[in-house]
Image 1 (cartoon, rainbow, N blue to C red):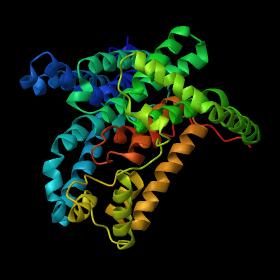
Image 2 (cartoon, one colour):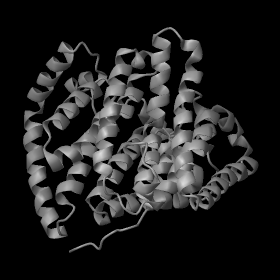
Image 3 (cartoon, one colour):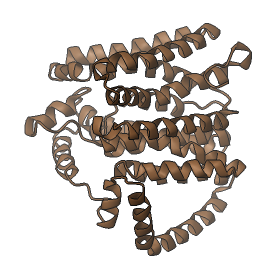
Length: 401
């Protein structure tokens, strides 16, 4: 049973429980706060979110009890992360304010996501993960729909709603491709309609995630030559869809209106503004200015914050993973880190078996797409879970030409 696998179920299914809670953790803590505020107990939001911390402590504590050898891995990972944060604090005084500002996120990374990184790194058999992630997907969609009707978007914002819902919708797609269950398709459609209440990053992330999953399920076994032929066919299909897009947008807009939902994404689609970077243009230009003047120097974690805020105090961070890495570590080292992440992502998709590449594809795509247009790797806890998966080479196969 999901979240309650015992010692006899083995390491990999126990690890599944840990990864499921880690993936759901941020969604759960934000969602429960919105729900509690909606019913008039806003003063107890923090206490309500404590439930998910206790659930994490139970699931991960049970995992450690069954797999005591993982204590060493946890200790090493925590020492490395906390040590890096301490050294950064000592070497780069201008980053001190960010430690106070983002303390909650740092605490979550230490308590939840560094442990999940060590688990993700050690999984050696992903068998059964697709079926169990389907259950998590259904629960996540249901949870977010309830949160939506309990004023989630008013308590937080529409963009956060979309990005937190997105991965759970994609989790249903592998099961549908493999087993053709109509209920999975219904959940995907319902989830997609509610995604329209989110921002465009979740809309784009959904389609990229679906394409990645389709590759993992349908094309993963092909040789490179066969894959090129299939990709050409997909391009022609996409061209056909683009020609019909104006009619599809009108139809989708009618459905959203019938549901009584406000959708900024739909408004942007109708105005051909989906890929407009709006205020991010100025953020990206300012980030590039500092990058050009910082080709080699390491400024430290959180350095992008104080550099950007010298010019405009309202800017939180670069809203792009690559720009953030280059601002913090310089062009050479930051660029190298970016290439390693991209290389590992592609490698895991190409060399992993169906279940492994699919699970990594779902989680990594959701997080990396978000980090390319918003958020920050220093506060996006699940990014560290993704790192564990990307560096997990257990059971990888050889690439066929």
